[in-house]
Amino acid sequence: MAKRALITGITGQDGSYLAELLLSEGYDVAGLVRRSSTENFERISHIQDRLTLVSGDLMDEVSLINVLRDFRPAEVYNLAAQSFVQASWRQPVLTGEATALGVTRLLDAIRIVDPEIRFYQASSSEMFGRVHSVPQNEHTAFYPRSPYGVAKVYGHWITVNYRESYNLHASSGILFNHESPRRGLEFVTRKVTNGVARIKTGLDTQLHLGNLEAQRDWGYAKDYVRAMWAMLQRDVPDDFVVATGETHSVRELCEVAFAAAGLRWQDHVVIDQAFIRPAEVDLLVGDATKAQHQLGWKCETDFYGLVEMMVAADLAAYEK
Ligand code: NAP
Ligand code: F7E
Image 1 (tube, protein in one colour):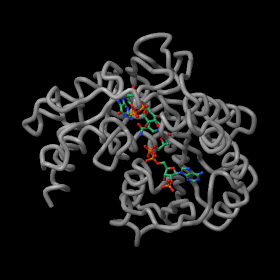
Image 2 (cartoon, rainbow, N blue to C red):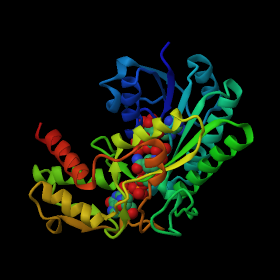
Image 3 (tube, rainbow, N blue to C red):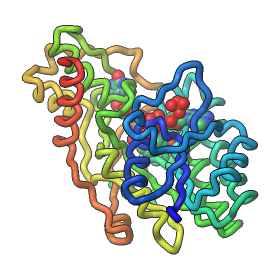
Image 4 (tube, protein in one colour):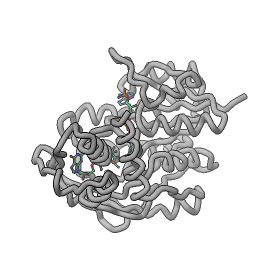
């Protein structure tokens, strides 16, 4: 019988790539989806007929228990979260409910229904925040700088705690920023590549951005979901940093993205205070040595390849 996996957050960027990977590995894949007045299955529409979509919400523990009882997965990937850092200042309690306490609800549901389930938690480099050392690895102390980062630290530690308290096979992937043509339009990479495409096709002339000096370790989401899966194939659960090991500023992102369409970023980018955050994470760069050695993971797409891919995808969409 095929192995069964449940993905929370299947309608999101990572959920869609992970679903593709697990289907290609022969899994029966279920995805948790929240009720909405309009369906938002764009990222999974091409594989929807091969998925089982089940209704539930990280806010509602009974829904999680019922989904686990009905589907009986061997692996659960918890990708659902309020994932936008900027929104977390406007909705700090909701962010805490979903991104932090949601993890406990799911871990408890696993304990109740089947403690043999292998669990993946989507932890984040945002936990490092005001970084204690460069580059950041599994031993770097956390200093989150947003309600989102604080919530992810809780989610990370409750995963470690349930592993140690109840012997669950619970792993946490500390993933640095990863992007793709399926990235939400509010995140800076996609905002820039989409903006470039709109300017190139004459729909806009300006792109409003915040802090151009922030530096991030940007990788490709499709590469990163392989690391998630690899973590749950090990006999022993553990925590892993997943990153490219390179960092680039938002300014460099603009240079590369605009140049990919034959434009000069200086002619179009406008600094707008509305996108400056109350507290910033200035520099992130990850050390993924442990993932490389123990998971055999490596990133295959670099920053330049990623940005060019995203610009090309956005241009193609507008030209169509
Ligand atoms: P995303 O595109 O924003 O997707 C988030 C998903 O969570 C969506 O499917 C969303 O459903 C779902 N969701 C939100 N609240 C929920 C709730 N209360 N109950 C059930 N589902 C809920 O995020 P992503 O970029 O794929 O990231 C996946 C995970 O990795 C997130 O936990 C994120 O915080 C974490 N992470 C991301 C990165 C990155 O660079 N992408 C790096 C480190 C960690 P709807 O479609 O219904 O809104
Ligand atoms: O910002 C700066 C902004 O929103 C990156 C999430 O997936 O990765 C993501 O969080 C940087 C920040 O991602 C704009 O100030 C400048 O320094 O793309 P972002 P993020 O906050 O790093 C982590 C790892 C996650 O876990 C999160 O879920 O870019 N920036 N101007 C801007 N950012 C945005 N969004 N919009 C701007 O106009």
